[in-house]
Length: 174
Image: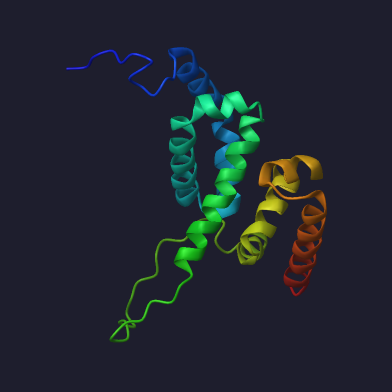
């Protein structure tokens, strides 16, 4: 049986704050999914990343709003940080006792899997990829990117420069 939870029982969040969060998610979801797709390289991981971050942010929505910062920038920064943490965990070596079978069927490929630009983007380090995605896919300024990722404008410029040089090198070969 469902029962109504009071603001005191729900951690102090009012119905208005929950409604504001639902509206924020409704309006921001398409852009967050695009950003997540560009960060992770595939739509399935992007959905997982967005969902994980929105779960965390939703539980602290009243605090996020009280701070007065741009909630979208806060969520983007959380997505970049979460993606970097996941990437660090996954890149560790895992040793196996025996070699895997050579007859393994490759997984179904994404339609963008063989796209040179996506391959080059996927090869960039996470922070450089985040800067490129925010700059060229989300059309944010250097100051907005710095604010969203919690870094200085100079770091945004240097990461962007390194990323573009790397992309030129990789894509120039083709």
